[in-house]
Length: 124
Image (cartoon, rainbow, N blue to C red):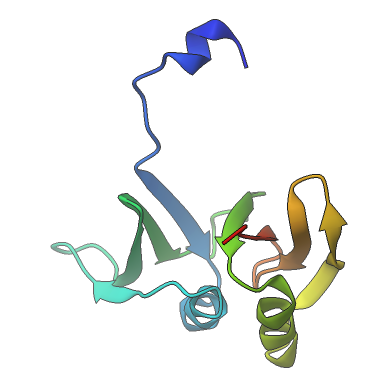
């Protein structure tokens, strides 16, 4: 990281993921411990939103004419093996099984839209 980036005042505050099946995606991310609320702003589409340490993660329905975007997200969880097992039971594909890494115990799974989701066990 450059010195300029270390002193940045910018902080990530919003991530929006456009998904093919909003209910399946919401269920997937709930397995990671996220709590969603259903929202709709004006005439916009109904969607789900969760707040994580001041950042908002939103799941919006993807329009059929919109291509799927590649995305990789990482989440810190308390028990990687348990989370991965829970996701597998619900049909998630495991890309990289839980194992020790330089960043701690981690795994990579695929969400319902094929996005790579990294889960790393917190040190707590």
